[in-house]
Image 1 (cartoon, rainbow, N blue to C red):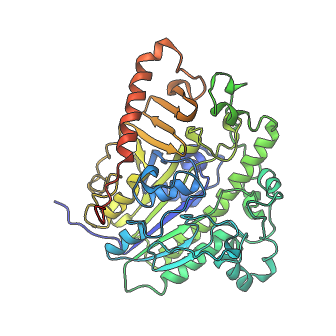
Image 2 (image 1 turned 90 degrees about the vertical axis):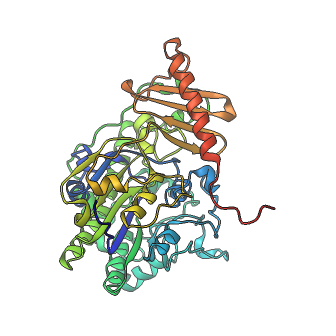
Image 3 (image 1 turned 120 degrees about the horizontal axis):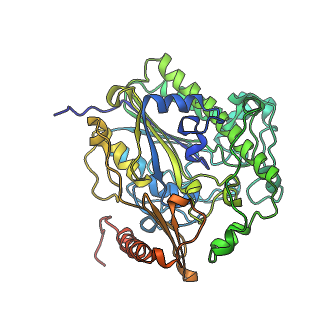
Amino acid sequence: MRAQVSPRRVIWITSDHMRHDHIAANGNPAMVTSALDQLAATGVNFHECFVQNPLCMPSRCSFMTGFYPQQTGVTRNGQMLPADFTPTVATAFSAAGYQTAQIGKLHFQPHEDLDFSAHPRHTYGFDIFWPSEERGNYSDAYYHWLEGRYPEYAATFRVPRSSDPRRHWTEKVPRPVDAPWQATHAGWIVDTACRYLSTRTDSRQFMHLGFYNPHPPLTPVREAWDTCEGRELPAPVRRPAEWADKPEPLASMLRHRSDWSTEDFRAYRRGLAALVTEMDMAIGSLIEWLRSNELLDDTLLVFSSDHGDFAGDHGITHKGPSFYDEVMRVPLILSWPAALGSSRRDCRGLFEMIDLLPTLLGLCGAPANDVMAGRSIAGDLLDGRDPHGREDVLAYHADGMAMLRTSSHKYLRYEPHGSEVLYDLSDGEFANRAGDPAFAQILSAMRLRLLSRSLAAGASARPVRHPY
C-alpha cells in the first residue's frame, strides 16, 4: 500500500472565460500556450470536465466549496456567498494544515464599484487576502502595485467599469496595449505570488491565483498580440438560423449577436487568444521561478477555469445559460511530479468541477470530507489508475434552468418556459431532437435522470446548528 505524502505547496490557478480548446495541447495548434502545454505534457490532463453553472460567481462558489449551486444559494451573478459559509477552499485547506493566500480574482461577492462601496470584503477564511477582481477597474491591490512598480503604465491599463456604456466597444474590438506583460494584471499576480512564496519556506502553503484573462475587455499587450499574428484560428462553428427549432429562452440567446459579421467574430476570437497568451507568459514565469528555486517537484500546480466563451460558435459571444459545451467544458490540468509523475496522462471520463476540491484535499492527505457533494479521485491519481468518470454531469442556473449531459446526449430544461432541448452529440449541438419520435425513449430517460439528480443536488449535507 502506498504511503500518503503531501505537497509542500498547492497553487490553484483559475482563469476566466477560458475554453478547453484554448490550450494548444488540447487540439488547437493556433493557440500560443507553451507554459500550459508544458503542464499538460507532464501532468494529468482532463478532457471532459464540466462546470456546474455557466456564469462566473455561481461556478466559482460551487467548485471552490465542493457544492452544487443549489446548495450554495449562488445560482446567478450578483448573489453573494454568505460570509460564514463553510467549508470553503480556504477553510478546508486551513484544516488540512496549510496557510492560505488569495491573490487576484475570487468573485464570491459582487465587485461593481468595489472602491466606492462601504460594504466589507469578506475573506472567506483566507489567511492572506489580496483581491483584485478585474484588470484596471478599481483602486485595488493590483492598481496600487501598478502605480508603484510601473507608474508610466498606470493610465494605459485603466479600463471602463462593467456598467460603463464605453465598455461595450472594448469588449467587441481588440485594442492591443503597448506595455510589457510584466505590468499586466497577470504579471502582478505572478510577481506577488513569487515574492510571497520566497518568504514562506517554513510552512505548507495553499495559494489561489485568480487570473482575469481571457475575460473581455479585449486589451492584450502588444507582445502577446503580435505572437498570435498570422495564426489562423478556427472559424466559428454555426449553422444558419440555429434558433428556428429552439424554444425560448434559448432562441433569444441565439439571435442576440445576429448583427455581428464573420469578421467581428474573428476579431473577438483573436483578442481572446492573445489574452490567453498573455496569461500563459505569466504562468511560464511562475513555473520557471519554482524550477529555479528547486520548488517545482514538491508543488501541486492546478490549472482550471470558471467557464468558457462561445467566441462566435453558434453565433454567440461571452457566456450564458444556453449550456453549450463551449461554455460548460473547461480545461483542467494537475501537475505534481513528486507524486503524480512527470509523464502525460489524459483523463477522458466525465467529471464535474465540484469533484476538484475534494480531490485536491485527498492528494494532500486530508481526511475525506463527507459534507461536500463532489467526489474525490485522489486515490486513482496517486495509484496511477485511470479515474472512472461519472455517468453524467449536472449544471443549474437561476430560475429553473438546468442541463444534464452524458457522453452521448445532452438535455436542457427551461422550467419557467416549460421548454426542453435534446441533442444527439454525435451530430453536435445543433438539431433539437426533443420532438423527434425516434428519440422519445432517450428524452424520457434524460428527463427522469435530470429530475433525480436535481433533487439530490438540492439537498444539503451541511450540519444543522440548531433544530429550530
